Image (cartoon, rainbow, N blue to C red; front, side):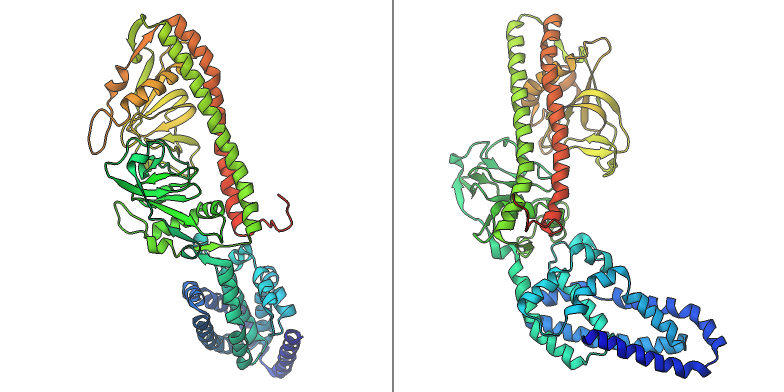
Length: 562
């Protein structure tokens, strides 16, 4: 093969040069040997590190002509760089043997051989379109990261594979003395085919979806079917019921199967796959997919962190950044066959269905507990009314929101729906936790374990001597009555909030023996809710781990029946 013949010619040349060196002063050579390998390796590393991946990416994706011109330009520049290597050799070492060892070490490393094996053994410069596809697909994302150390922040940059392939051929071809004209002619022939293949497999969001601008009358909506950024939960956690309807005639409509994306502060990762028809605020983008792509597959693809990072990086504004709609529509989407799309959806959807089932079970468990509470209150309506502070300690956290840690061991509860992590904990045990300010003021949750609190979040724990199961009964009471009563705050206008006395002075009809019985009954329900919430966290982690592996092809689904 041409590659092998080229290498044989190179080696023969090296042997001839080696014979000429027999009369050389070897003491001088010996002194320079130690430096030569290191210097050459540094030079090669410097060459590779100076490649401008972004420029190549933009050129290749722009058009086949632009890609061809960029490659020819790179070829010329790379040849100039390679011309420096002999000067380095002459300056730092007269030992061609040391140079050969250095080069040999460079292009015979395990990772480099793995990447180049297909090219070296099969490249005859007359690739068919199918052979071109095979070569592109033979280079995996993992290989790219190992060799080129390409930072993972640009997962949406689709031509990574072809960029790497081009880089490898540029490194190999000058070393095996293939005429430049032949290389240029080959690129002229093949690059349009490569770009066409890439463009068929990867599409910009604008090519496979639209932003819907259809309208719906607010009179046709209710608090469940109206979606705004306020009732979209962060970290892809779905939606809640809206606090109110807008005071306008019409809003943007959405349909079942649309993707709703909050366009304010995109780093909160508020996105929801619509399960019913409805309407939304202007700050929510409605992405409607075309027939070419499965809408649920598109939702999962956009669920990756890389998408939200991209939207954040291209957003406009500082205090209240908003996504740039034009930039969002330029985001690249990997488009496998419809069969593979459906397989990916099935895998991820099964996990989500289990999460949704746990949520439904929890809702039912709470409703049962709520009915038991109402029964207790009805049967004890004439009982003494007490402040809950007689049963509960009420305190706030001391931490700022920026004192969290992504690698922390303990839950950190702020006023937002989703918990964060902390390296420290304030309390260890069962507690009722209440949001003290902001959009979720009054929101009440239960947690049993070690946790930390934000300075405007309240913790309620049992006082000494109280039946330990009372914490479960009191949680059901606070969730059922205090939360809707204080939701939206008792003070403030721009930023609503509650104060300590709103909690300590909250009244409960209290019959000790009957409340103990009620608390014992609901304790198992609340414990089960806690277990299901923990299970959902683990399932979410599993889904988020599988998601990028499925999307980038690391998990091969071609021969898997689902």
